[in-house]
Image (cartoon, rainbow, N blue to C red; front, side):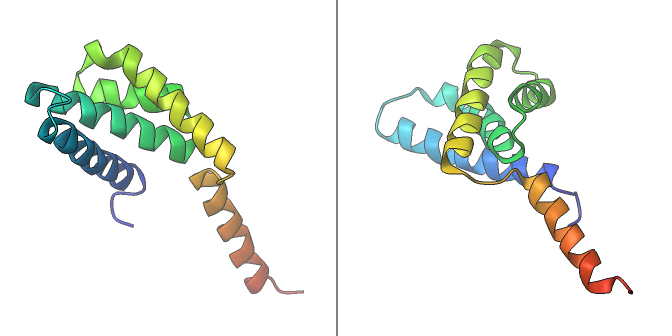
Length: 111
């Protein structure tokens, strides 16, 4: 995949944040100036839930966006996403990739 996994995860998180923020603004639950916060929190949450690295996810998104005022909320969102993913029993993305690679090696090994 060109761009690896990092960019698609962050892009999907940003799209999710735009959708959630748009709905919140539409129903007057948030001010339009808060859209950036929705983007940052969803990006941090999606990355953290997918990779299972909440502090890394929160810091990565905060550093990339420069939204340092969102740091506490991003850490909370990242931990909630990680805990939710663990409760649901999904595998971290890099563990899944490792299993696929090892499975592929079994087919090509010569005895």
